[in-house]
Structures are given as C-alpha cells and as structure tokens.
Image 1 (cartoon, rainbow, N blue to C red):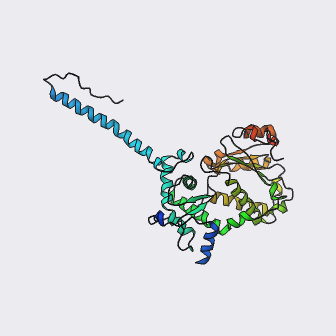
Image 2: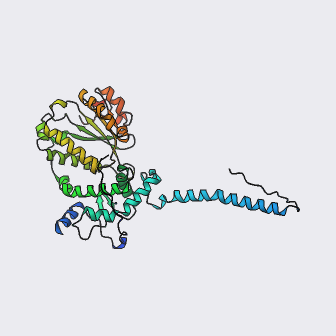
Length: 355
C-alpha cells in the first residue's frame, strides 16, 4: 500500500440527474478536453384464567406481546441491514463486501463528480462518467464499478478521503502517461516478448502472470531506455487486467522468476526502472494482486527480503512468498494455489507451458 498522505476531498455537490448525464468519456477524449480548455422466556397465559385474577392475566398477555415485539424488532433491523446491499446491483465479488466496505464504496461513489472535476480540471463540463479498466464509473450503481471502487477504499484502509485522492491521482496519471497511446505501441518481441508471459489460472480462476527477468541476456536492450521499459511494463499490466471480468475475478497471481539474474550486476537504469515501476503499480493499480511469488531467488535477494520484512505490512506480507530454486521446491509452493495441470513443467508442473 502506498505511503502517500493525500489531502481530504470535500463532499461534492449532489450528483447530476442521470437522465442528463453525458456518455462515458474515454481517456483520449478527456485528454483532448483538457488540451482544449469516486429464546427469550415468555410469560405464559393460562388457557383457563381464574376469574379472581383478570388483572394478572391481562398483564401477562401484555408482557408476552411486548417480549414478542422486542424479539421481532432486532430481527427486523437485521433484515433491513442485510437487505441494504441487495438494493445494489450485485455479483459474486460484491456479495463478499463487508458492511464497512459497502459504506465506503457508496460514499466514494457519491464523491465521483468531485473526483472527476479534480482529475480533469480543464474539461468543460467535467465528465459525469469515466471508463477505467473497461468499467464505467459514475454515480449510477453498478456491480462492476463497485468492485473497482472497493479496490481504492481497501488500498486506503476504507478512508474515503484518501481513496478519493488516490482515484484522482490515478485518473490524472493515466492522462499524463497517455495510456491509450501506450496500449497501441509495438515492442520488440525478441526482447520484451520474452520478459512477460500470461499462462494458466489459479484454483480460483485468477490469471497467472510470469515475469522472467533472466530471459533476456542483453540487459541494455531491456533497460537502455528506462521509459520504454516502463511503457512496456504498464502495457503488460493493462493486458493482464483485460483477463479480469470484475464479476468473479478481480485479481491475479504474479510469479517473478529470477533465474539467470545477477543482483550484483544491476546498473543504474535497472534500479531506476524497478523503482519507477514499483511506484506506479503501488499508487495506480490498487488491490490487483492476489499472491506474489519470487522464485529462483538469488541468496542475496533472500537476505534483503528478510532484512526488510519488518517494514512490510502484514497484509502485503501475507501475499508474498520467497521461494528457492529447483522444480520440486517451486512446485510444492505454487501448487498450494495453482493446480499442477496449470503449472509449466519447468516449475515442476504438468503443463507444457511457454518453454
């Protein structure tokens, strides 16, 4: 999770009338706009009441009715509370939201007009909806949109003000980075095509991505132009996200293979690229990671990991595993979340993989 501490976002004005709302705007259109101008015990009543005690019988009757109401009221409240999310469009992922998450998601959604206005200050008028990762975000309830918004509030521990700032920052960055142009860029398949692979799924249907850092021996070809590497890495991430439906799956498993990598020979460009990529994914791609495995890790990197382990949040640490070398060792770890039929043979699985 990012360590940034953004300013709180003021509560926006009421959302515009959906009937008057404009169609979703793409990032390219928004860029153009900017250039032009988020069981009790009941007291029983006898079947036959003695004539000498009518008051006692009446009191007993009232007591029973009161206790029955008291019993019913908590159930009614609980039913209403449980029914509240059902008023929202639902899918498999939203049904897993906690009450606190639903509350934060709804509040962030109500702030979207203000979020869009701040993200695109030169757009006039400000967009009423924006498409992010193929999902339309607006004040109109939508199950997939709720899943996207939940990522931002979870990344900021349900702090809606900070989640709003994160979403604003992400939308601005996508325009500045020219994400639409990056997605059209062509990269040398003999270089970058060997660095990243998407293969198989885990046991929950999440796609598995592989980063093969040692696949290309000419590091200058990869990192000679740091910004070119960053554009490729972002494109690879975006292509991976296209495999998520945001209905049953909204995360992926990442496997970082360090076979053939020398940690002692990293130059300034490699370090700069790693730092910038980490910052981008930390700040602008929240909660997309289900699990991350570091395999074939050099001994030096293992020591570095353990050195910095106390500084890593428990939530992040729970998603990370540093694995040694050898197909048997690697498959024993990966097979806990990925079926052997989905693991390439090079890692001890049964699949032909991408060799």
